[in-house]
Length: 194
Image (tube, rainbow, N blue to C red):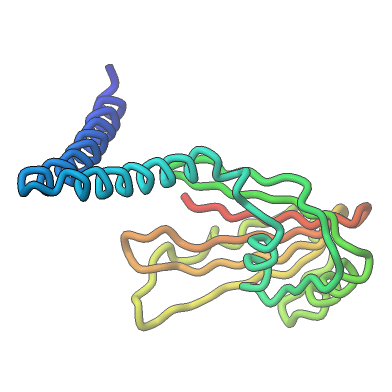
């Protein structure tokens, strides 16, 4: 069996064991002091908290709302003023994290966002293929010297805004790509951590 798989199985078993042990202690300690009802309450609350956490991880895609999408776009000073529709949303990965969602936006919002991209200082007109801003950038930065990189360009198919920020050692860099499809009123947001 692969050592990587064995490592993760042991980690999962350790987490499950500690969780069950903590819930049991939450019941057993008050019971030992004659407070059985209090022990049941503590064990119940701990059980609900653990179950809520597990369900939020399992149903992460279903618990992502339009307001969450709006908040992620606002981090890049992209505002949606009109109503919009969340078409799809997907989270994947543990070590290599990928988050992508797609919105149908109004023609006015599309126009405003494309103008923001095309009026940026570093805008490039009609690039052959989407680039990857991370290629020649540092992977890590000191906590004092935080640098941010952006790219704004247009391909034959879409307008693209890219954002990259190296983080401290031990943390994956922040990389976001926001694309506006020319032929449709669609916005695609991608967050890639690897």
